[in-house]
Length: 250
Image (cartoon, rainbow, N blue to C red; front, side, top):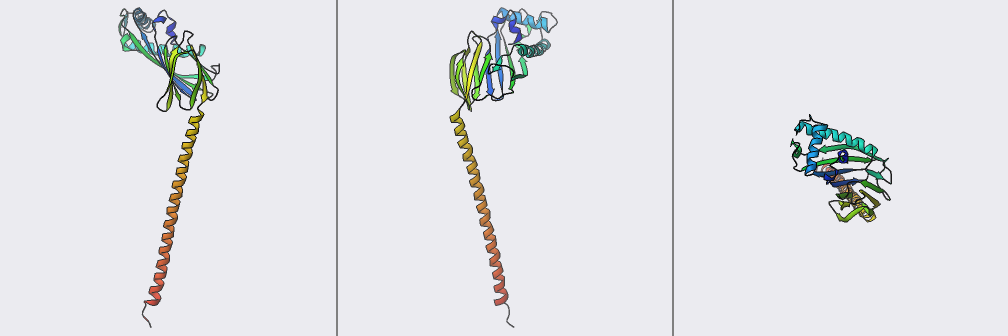
């Protein structure tokens, strides 16, 4: 991915990958840089595939190329999935693909200046990721990858991920490394029981706090009610006192 990586300029693409994983889906964003002679090939690709073949790339040709590449990648991922859960792509569905081709591609097709493009693919999982799930990813050999996971996930082990490091992020766990020459990475997921226990304790603490506040409010209301009743009794007896003891004697 993308589909045009099968063209002769394959070696020119050096993507970096950013994956955000959730229980019911993921987003895969990546960046590609095309340099030197391969940037000439890429500009020719735009001009010939979606342009008017005038040896010049303009803005509308870039927009048409984005649409073309988006549609072609959706079709390519149907026949050659790049994400699997527990060894099968059946529960993985591509919902959206976006390409953002750089304005650096504008101009004469013979320009050899570098071009940096961005793309993203959104997936949903028809079966949630949980304890014992393994996730298989197919990427570009030797490209860098950052995988952001929820804090309630642990990565028990990995295969195909080189230069691996793991660190906590903002409410997430961040796994970094690079694809090996085999271009495949597998992650074995487990539940973070200590995190879940801590989360449950916090939820119970919040619930207990809510119960305590509710009781405090009930006590205040009850106390206020007693004050009102006492005041009513006082007014009642005061009325009797005035009526029988302070009224003129006949």
